[in-house]
Image (cartoon, rainbow, N blue to C red; front, side):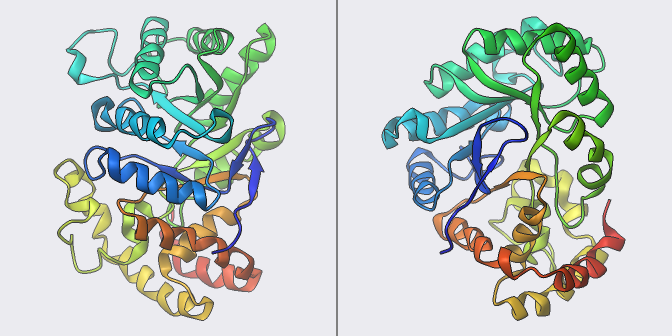
Length: 329
């Protein structure tokens, strides 16, 4: 296993592992607290220091599972970074107009307290506004996020899947008022999803020092090749609430492109999945690539991408992109 390396989260002083572990879909649904302990321990042993989560994942239960795992692992608090994200609210708390699809001040302040309770922590390191909210002024959201940090409940804040224009507006508001600025964005980034990271955000890296914690390096598993014959039993795509992804996962043109990556992966002595993760991590704008895993062996396979990184020559990357770029968005 190659040695983990660490990158600054944008222009902040925080150092995050180049590969990190996320809990979307898996925690609670596929991974209980015991399995989470095993996987987080294996990730930590490999040098992973960032564990990504969100309020909405498994209706809050993903945070609870990760919190229980952290209690059992007893790591020093300085040794790991935990995130959460707010926007969709929790159905289990009942319907209410101010708790769903919003970034208003009332929701954010209460959502923060709810996450801390579920994690059993006194602060969360990174807190994201999980989607943009067109119905709340960016100034209200930015001020609430600043106040959460001033109160010591979070250390850094950022966005997920926001437009470059909205990120810039939030950053400039914070700059003007002397508030804590958004430090990071969490966009989807993989061989089939590139334009936002490589084009739309291009000016932000220099202008605001934006860092990226990217998700879905395997395009929800499409880049493993396992969906070439349909949706296999036991896969993430087979989960009941993933039915909306079936068309994307079984897309014939993209699965054909994945098949064309197989010989390139063989040249590198790796799997297509490792090649895809290494490709995402190769981008110097990416602070960390968030990986998902439902078992330790899968996590260790994904961590093998570290060994592939130095082998990705300019010529090889050009060959990879010749296959995938025509299908990328």
